[in-house]
Image 1: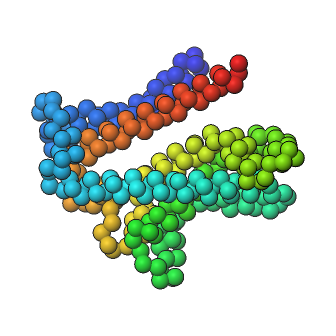
Image 2: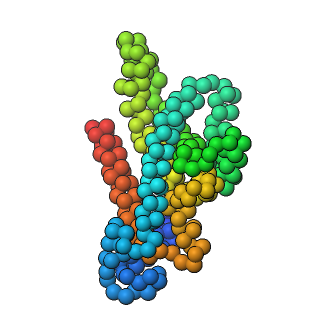
Image 3: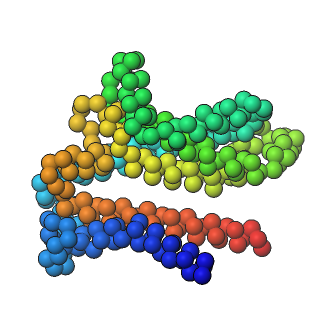
Length: 267
């Protein structure tokens, strides 16, 4: 009986989480401007999205481009910084390590609006002109702790004698880092990169408060502005579908790769 209720609960969660996305995906294949009104199968919205034929689609594509560029830069830089920070935290001892770990967790527990307002006030205080660069810096700031959180467990699982043995055999610290440490931390770094990339794609509050008044739009701010005008651009439906399918395929590929690596390691 408990197993039955557990399965029902899991299916209920899956339906609640994914039914809206499936609904949007289905209605991305119709020309209707009103979500829920099926007017026949069509791929016109996909064509409009890539060709920019519809009014407002050009700004939508610009918002998508900004979102992807900012997310890629933020995820890459935060992965590098987060990995370095995780190695440093791992090598610390005593209460200092606990204190730094606690401080690293605070940005993840903070509401996004607090982080956004805090960074906005910081940029204003130092008279930093807000725009593309401040948004990237803000995204790096809140993405880095997630990378640290993913890399630290891999460092804990690692046998420290391997790194020390490489040094004893004549390897320089950089060679040991590149050939021993980084390959062992790679799964955590990849997970951290994906999480940072996803968090950056999903962000609204931090971007809204740090983008300034230059008219910079990411996908989240574009949707917010579009909704305030009284409706959503129909081309958002195929765009959401493409993003969801892309992320889903990426996760499947990564999971299959991890399963294959685990099977090879077990042989």
